Amino acid sequence: MRAALLLTMVAGLTAATPAVAAPACTAFVDVTVVATDRAALAPHRTVVVRGERVATVRPVGAGPPPPGCRTIDGRDRYLIPGLVDTHVHLFGYSRAGEGDPATERAVLRMLVANGVTTALVMEGSPATLRLKREVASGRIEGPTLYSTGPLIQAPDTGAPPHRRTFATPDDVRREVEDEKRLGYDFVKVHGAMPRETYASLLATARRVGLPVVGHVPDNL
Image (cartoon, rainbow, N blue to C red; front, side, top):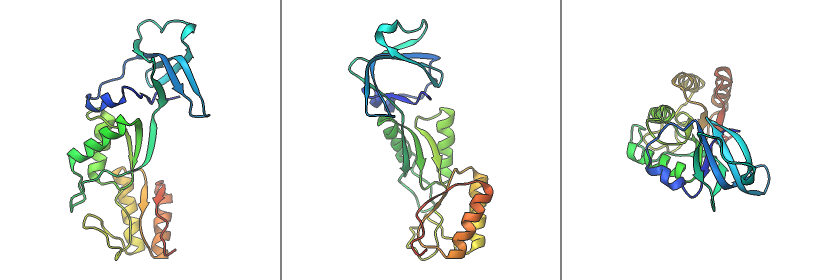
């Protein structure tokens, strides 16, 4: 079990704290563990985390934390696995599709403060890829990020200025190949699309190994 854990009473503090390397061993002592495989709480537990893994979960009376572990008082607090938000938008786009850095970082801090440790951005841009790298390197605080590329949609859909449109099967083939090359994790479809263009998108995404997510074209 990965140690994507948040202590609910202290989660809000992380929003104002610079990202730091996790200690080698951390023990949450006398905490109530929230189960995610069933509707249950496990009170008075000591949870020991080593590196990125939960090592042990045992009753408080089973013994003290291992020597050398950083200890966190868990009394009257709850420990849960990190949450996953599978539909995030980092608002503040310019006409060029670039996000506002201050807005994006505020959204990332808000997600972490609310227990979200993994997030999927559903309308990505080159700025999103930079944020993803900065979070992964520990330069800024935020959940682990995955991202679609820019939305793939046909012309005449009322798209705002920062959104491009793609008309032909070759258009979407080139776009999907580019998104794979740039390092996006998913392709997102949005709006109506000609049948042959949609077929080309799906075939290309399958060939390059990018899952397709988003809106089923309503005309199909």
